[in-house]
Image (tube, rainbow, N blue to C red):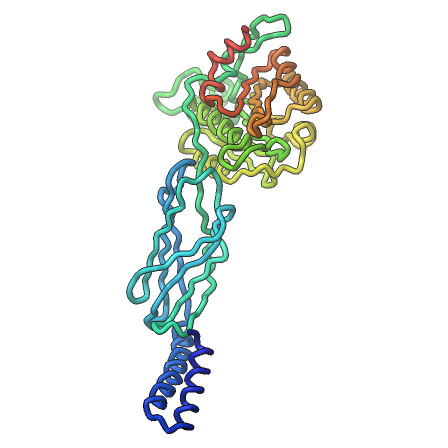
Length: 401
């Protein structure tokens, strides 16, 4: 029974009691009127600022982990409440509702979200509903969750070698030597520090100044490895968590993890709506940021891979090595990739998207054409072991078959 119903019932009972001269009915009617009035006063006093904190455990999670969401609520008002309910929306996971338990101004609830797929699930439309002890009145307060979200990172695979390490096969079947581009440029000179190698001495400056001066070198962009994640929605097939795009995200992250372990400067570039660019030089620098970008990545690119490579390749143009992870190798994209391969090392991870839709597939001409012209290509189909697909020995065996 809510406030309006209690007020109406109390008025009717009181009127009937007065008409029939019944004292018990008078007491009941007046009691209902008083309860309704007190409930309305309670509703005015209970309103006030409410702070809500969402904490996911584990945070950040990795896809497949069981995630629990703890909701902590603190009220400014000291007015006691009969019930506290939290409601909100977790992005693609949909709406949630849970009852909070606590005393005084603090309350808490735990929500089991189960095993979640990769993603960034923003918490929105958060509301706290407070009810009085008689159930006559309720107050709903909107809360700003301060851009809270449940973040689930992709599950990366452990790799010792990469398919691109296996070498490149030329059109006549001969092995092409892989070389690493020179990675340091002369930047400036500074005074020599005790213990430094004399190989770094800059002799012209030393002669001019009369003291040992050494060369200051800086890592150049051409030494960086750029891993390009194609976010074309046309290449996304399958259910969330087991889609071709999810596998592409895992592949891109696993390749970046290898280069981070080697101490090689790497850059993640996505073609999606956010156009993210993250530099990863080690497991400390940028690696956590990279995982967050991959967690939030969606197949929402507005530009096809071929056009992106030709007109928007600002970072890839400076890279010494480029790794492209894509499900789309139409002729235009292959032409653009081959043009890039003349100026830098190139390798491709091709995700067979139709296999994630349950359709029988065969390798199209794009990956075969790239392989024949010396570009290492790793093929990943649904059900494949990703670590084996990205590993050098398997790719060598496929190339030699």
